[in-house]
Length: 563
Image (cartoon, rainbow, N blue to C red; front, side, top):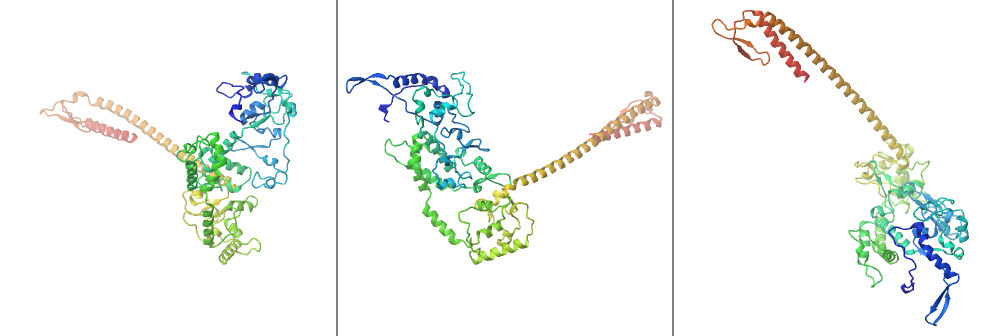
């Protein structure tokens, strides 16, 4: 439709989306549409220069998905988000992604289509149900017959209908012909195309949080028990590793992809300058029309440019020619093969996987002489159960297993027999030698063992703390006893001083007859000080003084020990 045929019938001001309250603003438009459908409006024809009764009808609306819900009244979020399937919508709440996933789209394929029976490529089930019938206007009116809702600022949630289905009865049903329209609302393809383009580009280039290939998505695949080759793998250090997928692009391929977008030239007016949206190998700021051009025109060219099929095929042929022992695994990954051969959740060891992938499918004979000798040695060791180390429960590879006995120890930085991705640093942290690779399904057992060891260390630490507290308590008791003994010695010393002063009065200290001074030892420092006074003639007094000095020195030593 050209711009000169557009008529701006309604303009709603405001910064926020109105939601259900859009019916308040649509009411004048609905009244005019009723007038145009009924009596019509007298209109002047400039070409014939005559007047006639103009009648008009609203055929359908064209809008994005959120506006679809506002105009139709259907809840376009939650478990019944599909307005075509209505209450027959098949949805699943993803445990880790925290979103609803809709997997019933194969119902719209014709009966006998190959995708209907392809359970492996989808959700693990075959689709045998027919496509749901389009819901008519009469059925919609029947479903909203008992609905109660209010519009305006004091609007409340609708009741009287199934939860997460209808939010209101659309104001367009007040038009006498709206119930009988086969198509009442259409989706704007441009808006949907932009969302698909963003998700596709960000996933291919692995641009951070906007990529749909993340840990939550891989965990949901494991929760749904589909595509085991994409399940996340846990390292011994506790970190999680995501294996590369068939759509994972290498740094070189990403660089070539960006070069196509940066150097592309379009005729004037056909598209905007997409190179302005590329900054430091990051894509942002794409408009709706930019996404349309990328999906329709540029994406196939950029992918074809970044992936040189002939070069890859030649490299694959050279690699296959260099193989000493070719395998019969084909394009099936090791993880998928191990998952298929698992018995009661226990996957086969890498030696058993080697035997499976190096024998012919029909007669069971090995592919070449070297493979034959290797398979015979592995089967002999497996039958004799000759391993220097005991196999941990549920392990697929460990130190001294049959695989390493026959083919030798692991090389530095490489792990054999486990497919693409696993390396010593990824599986065992800083360890470079093979120790123990436990199946992913038994990671709970390893976690339980680690938790048990942690509890034992905590108990040991608790016992050591108790012993330290007992030693500190004992030391405090000894210090208190020494302080008590010190106080007793001080009191005894005081008593002895009183006795000394009683038997040796101060008058005994005086000058000698020849004028000399008697030296009396100082009790505190051990030095001698001179006293002027009378000569002390009593030897008992000097014995007491010496005894006092000795006791003071003992007290000083005790004080130093206490400190």
